Length: 498
Image (tube, rainbow, N blue to C red; front, side, top):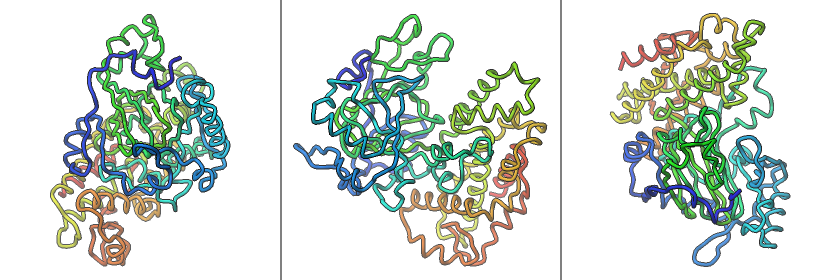
């Protein structure tokens, strides 16, 4: 296997480079129109100089190059266990994962660095710390500020105040830790790498190099079929390996974009782009997975396709299974990280939060902030969710029969609108969404001052009324949501009032 960075990309046809833009000269609307909406990759420069991590986590070297300050991590972030990938060992479709303490990981790195093994002389020594939920583990240490371009992050807003799973058969301790958020820190020596993949949920991602250099190879979604076998079940693991032409007959037709990401640069990874990544130097990166209205269809398409596969896999036991649909949803959650009921509960809360914000935008005399662009964004958000909910109506999981037998936890989470609107978790989500769009539209404002004005409990940053009755108004529109048809009706009613 040629996992080392020195050979990365040498076996594939590279036809272009990823565009680079100074993030200080790019507006949010330009980013949406040129990159997020058309789903194109981008490297952003000039956005990380003020980050605390750039100072604390690195040591200065020659030619302004920085290297990881491993002693700082050992002293300040003694995580009991971190997840580490063995870059020389494959396990199913990914690298073998190990668990060890932060001190053990750093000792391994320092020991191998001293003997020269991090230069690629011995792949078996290369361990790559991945998917470290740093923000959840150390919330008081503000290592970085999410750039405004990535502030419209529904996934992490939701997980900051809600569990991913409600069904007690799914929501065990390990699942909830793994789904706690999708904000990660990665740390790896030169030569560590990540196999070819598309991101979880077909989300967007952004990745910032605090120090080090990475080589990225990207394949656009229209060519993704070229890396799969004849049955479209198995994909290429390492593009630098001797890929079997018999197993993957069209692989050599694939055309790749290349990018060398330098320290202090941020790369935007669009939905559905397969990519393979190699650390060309000792590297620390900060990574978020996220989605919003612009890629919601990607998330739904993946969930729907994986749901169909989950059903097909156990179709032969349908007649003897007491809860066939429940088993399908448990398998979908295990394989994809979220099932259709999780996703519907998520969408219900996002609809309610967007409707509330749109309500305030439509009442300019009572709003701190109002703009046509922001109103259009809330309308777009609701329209995209409506499109997905309309497709859900015809999915077996949401048949009347199956909705009657879902778990009480799922039913409670999706049905009572009054209960949802008064729930502390929903109110935190609503506040986060409100603040995100203020940040996007006008820059930071004094949120504490605005909240003080909302004496009766309205958490919209836009609201100036001390006796806001938005919760009563929304409840008047619809008191209960029993399935996607009700969600569509709620959106239609809210948009009709605009």
